Image (cartoon, rainbow, N blue to C red; front, side, top):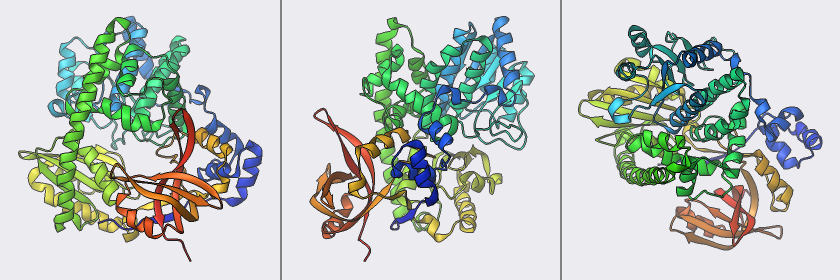
Length: 573
């Protein structure tokens, strides 16, 4: 069902490599990687390699930030109760946590509300505002949601509730009316960094409050939590997101931590370890996310808010509950993914079109987004996965880089009761009887906007790296380029006519482990999830081309470099 991957070279101005390597005193390998990432100016490259909190922009450059800070400080002075309205994913939970903690430290009377996925639905809803108003709240601050909540904003005004919206999702043409609407993607906002996660926008509000009240020493502790939300929300790790992610990871690795975060790291097996973006994205993040996917996100919020050492037992219990919910999530996900893959592989109406649209009765809405992502990974096509509940279907959408999923949904907006999101990830609600119609319309849009090669996965190669060029200097410089993710992918190199001198051997029935030799230099490596290519690799053991990244591993207390093999191909003649 999937085509052979295209090895594509990332464009690079070769003339800039040597001067940059000289100016920065780095290897040509690293200079090339910086140039490819658009960092061919020495000063910009230095800021990228060594980010600091001083590199964060003035938060008051965000439209409506001054009005938001003024209204919040007035509420604190008048002892008005305020509420933070979050979202149920990691981005929304961490946003809620940092803003609530900051307001409590400033002496605010503050509560929080995070909707439950199945009970409350997504985003800022009038019903939630009714509950908060009945609880005596006079100011509601949304985080990671609200930019398209025009109905809720009007309802807040009718109740006499002041509303501050902070969000990072794409706005409609009309911004909801509120006391302040903070979103760098606002069309009238001149803020220089448009790619913040929801927690990044919440952090800018905290930053502004710290500046206004002379509490800037508080900021690093909030950056640490913001890094978790930033890394799990898959925003580009450039600009302020890189500052937040890199400094936050360093603080997460170094400690010390409050009792709640400490319990979470312990349950994840990360206590005392050097934490990187992989650990956040695939170990810690899924456990925080599992609360919102499978039960109530308040479990995760309560855990991360726990700061009193007397809460150690409670924090441990909450962390273990997150771990159990994550195991339940994995089981649900595996069952739905199996059914979805079967539909793609056996139903021509589903599997023959450029956009995969699959649906199932009672599929757990908390995991369909993950299933959509895994379908994209497996088939390199955009995917929409819908959970049918009676006459209504709720969908999660994920896309490939060259396809704008939000624009595709906008092209058939009239058939959905609700939709929203980004180019690469979106959600929708639709009448169950219109799923086939949605499949047809979205694929008509795709037929007009995708070329055949767009559906072939690409490996973007940063350049050749012969084994003799893999030095300790290159290895340490690659560490400085981290964290890797969207906008700053892990460097991928190629090596030609490499000999396999040991293996391939199956590892856990899924991976291939082997040793390679080129020009007398031996490197060990693992090809992850490549078991089905064992025969091809064995047939080309005398000479094979590799696409690989370098990773550090530890064995018996010693650190060593190994190759993480992304693909193989027969050597070019």
